[in-house]
Length: 219
Image (cartoon, rainbow, N blue to C red):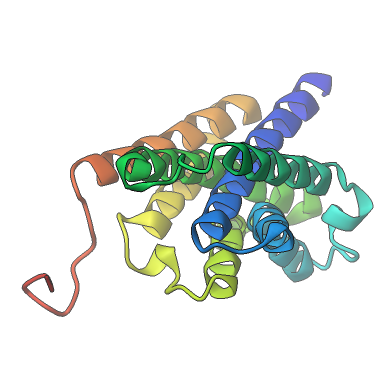
């Protein structure tokens, strides 16, 4: 039992740092002030879990009862703000490519981590046998914070337009549900999270996208 709790906590912390980083970087690129950077960082990190808990009837949501994740997201956003403040040239044009790669990596890690922890939370709440609900809650946990981030930043939600984002979360969630009956919970979580990260990174590397109604790309 101790091992399960430890793995679950570690994966959630990894996801929190990753998503807080992506939210803070979006805010920094949008030239928001310190409060804006913190708000977007924290919202991205804990927003999906908050929506999941509300649907599960967990009130107040766990982020208020166990604020370690909020503190982690806050510290992550502050560290990134200070790094950029000390090095004003870090997001200039010559660093944009590195910025995009870093954003994609953070998002991929956070997406994988929160997708599997979302399903695990559904199981802990007693809904593990309801596979469709578990998959939905896993995807919501994975993409919910990013949707809130993009809405606050005034952007079209990233998950609806780029590199099979939500599709990667769905694939990882389905993988978790399938593996959970054959492997231990720890192994199912780790392998499913890795699958999400791989799909996201490969989609970016090879420009995989779901089809749109237009046959040609707008230049």
